[in-house]
Image (cartoon, rainbow, N blue to C red):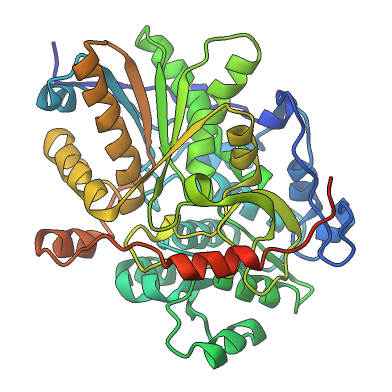
Length: 455
C-alpha cells in the first residue's frame, strides 16, 4: 500500500454554494443586540461597517448561499484543496486508526483564510467600497485580505496584534508585498489605541483591541468598510467550502469520519471542516464526534462563560452571545497568535451549548511536539494554530490504538508554518514555555461582562 494517498477533485468540482448551518439548527441562534438599547439589531444597524450583501448573509437562514462566479474563478488557483490519508503518521503512531487531513496551506497566503477574504473583497468591491480595515493575530488573515485586496484594487489597512507584529516579521512583509499597510496594535492612530497605551504603555495587544482600532477607522470614512476573518456567521459560512469538498473526497476514499478535529480561536476553520458534517447529521445522516481544540492559554470554549459580550475591547461592536473570557481579557503572548481571541464564534458557541461538539485545550509545548511529529512523518510543517488540531488528532489515534479501534479521523490542517519558523527555532532551543493565563485578570474580565436582561 502506498505511503501517501492524495484525494484530488477537479476544478469542475469546486462547490457552487456555501453551506449555512443556521438552516438546520434545532434551536435558532440568540439574537445580536444593540449595545445601547439592548434590543435585537437590524441590517441597517450594521450598514456603517459591512456591505448589505454580507449583512444579508449574516442573518440568512437559507441552507445554500450561491458562490459568485468571479469568486469561484479565483478559488480555482488553489481549490479544490487536497485531502491526504496520513499513512506514514499512522505507521509512526502504530495506530489502527485511519487519519485524513484536509490541507488548506496550498492557498497563496498559506492558510484557509482566503476562502472568505476573496469573497468579502468581491462583495465590498461590488458595493463601491474603496478601502477595507481589519485586524490580524498571527497574520494569516491580514495577509489573506491583503492578497484579496490586491486582486480587486482595494486599499487594505491591517492592525496587527503587537506581540505577533514583533514575533512574525515575515507575515508583515507578505502583507506589504500584496500592497497592504500593517500597523502594530495598540497604536497611536486611533482613540481606542491611544486609550489602551495611556493605561498600559507596554501593552502586547489583543485581537479585541485590534478589532476596536479597525472598526474605529472604518466608520471614519464613507468609502471604507470593515472586514473580519472569523467569528461572524457569513465568515464561517464561506469556510464551509472546506467540509463540502472533504465530503466528496471521503466518498472517493469510500470512508466517512468517526471523529472530526479542528483548532479553534474565533471558529472559522473549525466551522469550515465541521459544519457540513454536523448539518448532515442534523438532517438524519451519520453523526461523527466533533472536537474543537483550543489553547489552554486562551480557553474560551473550555473555561469561558456563555454570555452576551462585546467582540472588541473598546465596546464599539454589537453584543453577541458566545463563549467568552471577557472583552478586556488579554491572553499571554503564546505563538499561536490566530487563536488569541477572547470569544468564540456565536455559531460555534451555540452548537457547543446544543451538545453537538466537544472541546479540549492544550498547552503550547504539547502542540509543538505534535507538530514536529507530524512534520517528520508527513513532510508538512504546520502553523502553530494548526498544531492544536494535529495534537488532538494524534491523541485520538493513540486512543484508537489503546482501545483496538479502527476509526476514521479527519482534521483540518488549516495552514503551513513557513512564516512561523521562529516559533520552531524557539521550541528546539528550549525557549518556548507553557504560558498560563492570569486567573485574576480572567476573573476581572468576566466580572465586567455587560448586563443583559434575561431572554
